[in-house]
Length: 83
Ligand SMILES: [Zn+2]
Image 1 (spheres, rainbow, N blue to C red):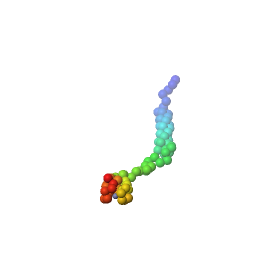
Image 2: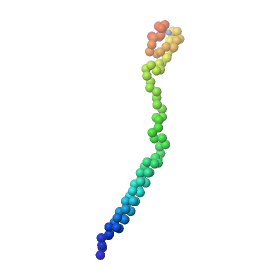
Image 3: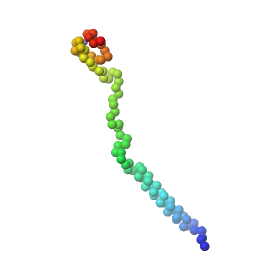
Image 4: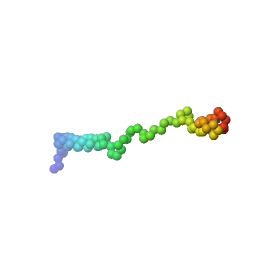
C-alpha cells in the first residue's frame, strides 16, 4: 500500500530542491557577471577620436605663384596673382 508521504518528508525534499535550485542560480549569476570571456576592454575610450574639423581650425595653404607667399586656398592674394 502506497501511503501518502508525510509532510515532513515533503518539506525536506522541497528544501533540498530549493537549495539546489538557488545554488545553481547563484552559480550562473556569478558566471555571467564575474568573468567576461574575450574582450579585455569592453567600454573604454574609443580607439581614435577625431578632432572636430571646423572651418576656422585648419586652412589649406597654397603658395601664390606670383609673390610666392603662402595664402589660404580660398582667399585671394593681396598681389592679385592668385585668382
Ligand atoms: Zn601673391
